[in-house]
Every structure is written in C-alpha cells, then in structure tokens.
Image 1 (cartoon, rainbow, N blue to C red):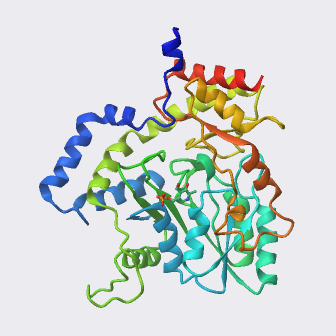
Image 2 (image 1 turned 60 degrees about the vertical axis):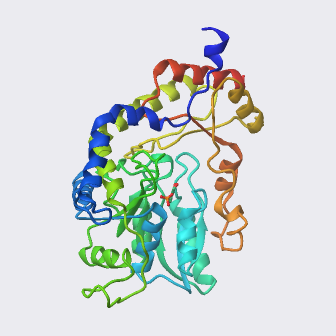
Image 3 (image 1 turned 180 degrees about the horizontal axis):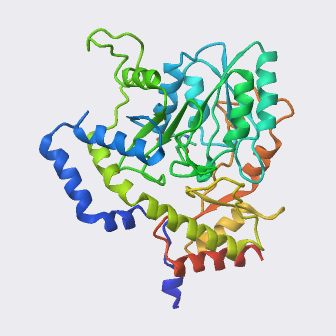
Length: 382
Ligand SMILES: Cc1ncc(COP(=O)(O)O)c(C=O)c1O
C-alpha cells in the first residue's frame, strides 16, 4: 500500500454506496411519484405504512416528518403537558428530551447502564420518586434503543406498569433490532423512529414513523399529523402539526426496506469483526442477553486516561474519521441543565460522555478498509 492509498479518507457513513446498489430501482420509484404528482398522501404512503407494519409485526404505522415529530406527536396525542414528568435517559440525542420539553412537560433524566448504554431500570425507579417529590405527575417513560441496540424493555416495562406510566420507545437509532425475538416497534404503547439519511433505514431527507397496536391512538396520530383535523377537514378538533412524510420519501423507503434485512446482517458481521479486532485494546460494545442491534453506531470506550482528542486526531491523520456521541449528556447541556435528574445522580452518563468514541459503520464497509481502521485504533491506543 503506498502512502497515497493509506491516507485516503474513509467515509464515516457511506450513503452513496447504498444509492449505487439500488441504482435504477430508486430512480424509477421517484419517477413514479413525479408521474402521479401526489406529493403528499400519495399511494406510496399507505404502501410503506403497511410494509413497515408487516416488517415489525405491529398493527398500525403512522409515517411522519421526522423522528422528533414522531415522539412529539405521541406525547401530544396522549395530552402530556405542563405539570407532567416524562422519564428519559440523559445519554441520548437531544431530541428525546426536547420532544418532552416542547409539550411543556418536564423531562426527568435517568442514568444508563454502563455495558449497553441504555436506560437503567433502577435509576428509572429513582427518577420517578424524584419527579413525585417535586410535585410532578409522572406520565410516561421514553427508553432509547441507543446506537441500534434494544433497551431492556421487560425491566423498563415492569417499572412503568407498576407506576401507571405509558412507554414510548425511541427507536430512532434501533429500528430493525429485536428484543427477545420480537422486533422493535412492538414494545410499550408506541414506538417512534427516524428516517434521517444516516439512520440504518434512512430516506433522502427528513422522515419518521410511529408504531402502535392501539387503533384509537393511531387515529389520533393521523389527526395530529394534519393540524388536528377531524372528520370534517375544516373542523380541526385538536392542536396538531404539519408533520406528514413526503410521498417521494415513502417511495425511497419502500425500495430501501427491500434490502434492509441484508444490510442489518452486514452491519452485524462488521460489528463482530470490529469486536474481534479491538476487544483486547478498548472496551467494545456489548449486546445484552436477548437484545440485538442494527449498529447505528459502533461505539467504543477508550482506556482510562486516554486523551480522546489526541486519539481522534491520530486516526484522522490516517484518514479514519470518528465521531463523539455524545460529548455532553442531556442534563449537562445549556438548554436542559435546569431539568431534574434521578436521585443519586447520573454518574454513568457523565462517564460515558467523557470516554466514548464511534468508528465508521455502514453496511458497505469492506473488510480491507475495516482492517485499516482496526490497525489505526490499535496503533493510537498502544
Ligand atoms: C435517539 C434519537 N431520538 C430522536 C431522534 C430524532 O430524529 P430526527 O432527526 O428524525 O428528528 C434522533 C435522531 O438522530 C435520535 O438519534
């Protein structure tokens, strides 16, 4: 390998490789929408909703404009608002807690499990007690299937049921993964996902979807998605949003869903290779018993005392990009630090924010390139 090849930059996520694989089928799918001109509410929307329902094993799917809107729409449909508390992990993308705060309710932050990065059920129980002490009414829990791995839905569901809260699963990163043999989309009252282009199942812009077995909730969500419209289009019966998915995005997603299982398999193969190549130099991600992952991110923890910026710079010099998800947990961020946290604090979230770093991961990463990344990581920590 000459110097030029060695320094060639590796993409962190290669959206173009998938575009190339799908080629003409994507062009034709988009052309069909351009032909029928039903840019909103076209036939592809109902088709995609039916196919997503069949894929995940849920009764109703309501597509929408983004993962954030998917979360917000469920909270709005359930009437969550001022005086209510919604329990969220702090170590997550900001949209999880943001959707709660947008309703006027209070996000109460919960710590995560060190091995899986997902919500810790014992911290959840403490956070519910914290919310009650503050005079808030706990209404819902939003577990996150972080980096693609399913959260511990049995443990979280048991705490939520015991406290009379509903569960809204944030599967923006985990759609396609399963828990104890059941696909995400089927846990709790509802599940939200995102089709942001870099997600395991992404479209060519913003998009999202909500999954639920509750027919009444699905009907309310369809109303919220279109300004709260009722049976009479001009008699709006509740507050809502402009939160529809574009037909073009649905057409793209129908094509991508055809290869999604194959891509999930590839991501799992690559994750295993990373773990074999790196397991003795850094802390590699661990799948909990009964959980699978779609590896939205492959996130390692650096040995104590490692200079993370220096590590990232050493990899960058070799053409290997990295990303830090998340350098600050939500309760450490300016817009959210005034919200309450679970009694006992969020030590694990804070520690993870200090030492995690994510490596390139996508279904089209070839083994030679992955070996280059593994060698660069090993060199940088030794
Ligand atoms: C955990 C999580 N929740 C919610 C979202 C929001 O999704 P969107 O960007 O489609 O609004 C994201 C997006 O990155 C996410 O990672």
